[in-house]
Length: 174
Image (cartoon, rainbow, N blue to C red):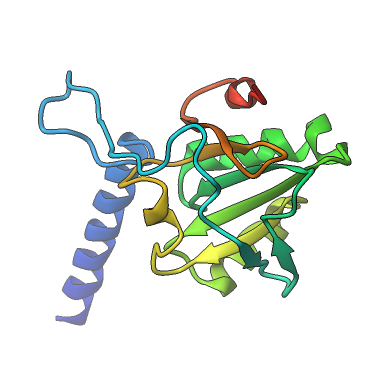
């Protein structure tokens, strides 16, 4: 009996993993030709709806500091588009910029999982966790990774759903 239960659990795990892999980082619509549209709750010109955040290393980041641009990334460790984005960002010149604060926020994941993921991949970007989607739901109803560009005045410049290739090309400051 135990052998059958183990086999069933393996089949379920495989099916779920396959479904997540094939669906990208969001739920597929019933009509495969229809585009997935998620509600977005911020607009260009809105003030960034996060005052501060604590990284997985315990550092408090003030996200309302005037005079600094911010790049906020909403992601998940299991999402291949998120992994591609953070890998590209990890080797980009953006990390060397003195006037941009970058924070990546892991959606619905715990500190231990995200820390292990970061350490395994050598990610250099500051990372925080959003275990219950409290932060994420201020921005959108679904879809990751998301790039949110914020100007020196703490106003949203643009938010992009950054799926696919050439994700860093979606980062704009005007």
